[in-house]
Length: 338
Ligand code: HPA
Ligand code: ZN
Image (cartoon, rainbow, N blue to C red; front, side, top):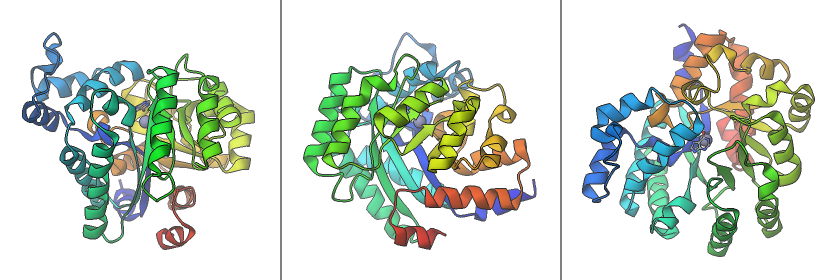
């Protein structure tokens, strides 16, 4: 397609990538061996990187993917593992024209299996320093995500630990989010946690909703949690009132097109409400989510959207500008990105 060169050159922002979702099956097996982590013996998907990759083609839902995602990231142990993973992601993203990356990570699950928060963040920070030195046009931020499959009190504990580090206020962490299983995990369950984050002065709040869950989850996340952004938010398109609200408030949705197709949220890319959001002036960015699992990084997501919707250069300009202005970086940095 004609626009692929253009899409490659377009300065892009990524707002929705889980660093743990960038482990390739090959790296997963290498790290399991080096770190002496045993993979499940009773699941034939774990026979080899090839069988594991083949299993990824058969995901049936978010929860089916999450099962593999959490096993996969249990091979990460040392700060150097987190550093290598993050640096490799950043250099690949930069080669695709990503100039600003906001990276999610899941401290709660790592801490629960004995990897200290300080180990994770020192690896992430080392990669950020190295990448920003090697790739002068790149800026990098980190966002911890609470995990909804774990008990709510565990989430409270994680937030308290994060607040104690002071990392929300020294530039280490740019915001606070929430992910993992969605259905039955209504925003009201997390109201106190988000209130505590806001009370402590954490302004940039986000949460995964509207990936599998209904538009009401998105509405309630906005009103009960005070989030300024919605990760995925795809199903917001089913509610006219919500569409208008998102447009009026400039709330950004961090869409992940290949993820939605691979996890069977939609049958095909064409079903995604890309045109609807553009026409209604709902701001969104296009992201990879878990690129090692879903068959593509940012550029492949942009190109897949282009294949499905045949957007114009003007449409892409609007998407790219919306992603920049919706980024969690300084005004000065936004000016540079624009
Ligand atoms: N949704 C929810 N949780 C996740 C995802 C996702 O797309 N990726 C990694 N954790
Ligand atoms: Zn996600």
